[in-house]
Image 1 (cartoon, one colour):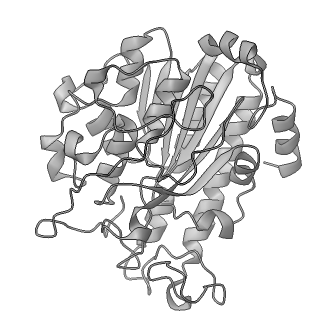
Image 2 (tube, rainbow, N blue to C red; image 1 turned 180 degrees about the vertical axis):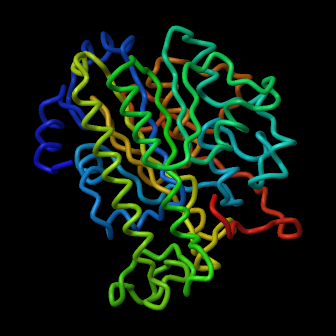
Length: 361
């Protein structure tokens, strides 16, 4: 997607991504509220500044960004996506790995946010597209929910990130979605690498000579810089550009009130250069990019969290959480959102049973 074209589209669309719509306009458009969540598996926050990502850069420029958000202390994909999409931490959803603990999960009590949306606003079209099948199979279409995806309108597991792009573009061109979740997996694949490559992968986006001495960047060094990791993020940014092209080309786009959120499930390379999962800063560090018709600054002097994604999506859609939902996340960056209260993150890391993620998830 050409940067100039993208820039003009953004500036010409309802003052999207940092606009100044007045209160009356905001209230009148609440019924048209829509949500797009772009999940970038295993993307380190620093990579956003080191890679060429013009589409993510424009969302950042005209939206709100926090490069120091955080996931739980078991920084694996299973608990990361479970926390983001349920809005609660691992002590509630009970997912602490990528496989075994799915059988102990509590998604009947703490379901995927799309199930909340379908319960509260059943007329909305909801879509979930994922390259990592476990997100749909285990979180959205959980065993505790009867091995089905409930009333979710479209659930697709793909074999590639390009197919994720294709399904989302098809939705935007040929349907009327209100809630879109998508997960791109290949950035994480590049971080893990494919043995026997030497070195096999690595979550290090710093090119040789650019690593700052003393900066807390895990095991990043010129020796394990992974150009494939950066190149995969850049390719994913091109897919995001295709999606945004389709979004802005929608005939009624100017009457729609989209909140776009971008976040990974975890970082990586903090303890083992091509792995993640440990309770270490670079494995746990994530980021949040929000873009919408009207935004407020993110809370300052507070630790924003992966669980805030679900809370923000529900708030934007006008859904008020019930007390028994016990959400840990809070709405951020949105007009009228309550003041942010920084809260502790529960500990689920048990070194006696923990297995780091050295594979592709």
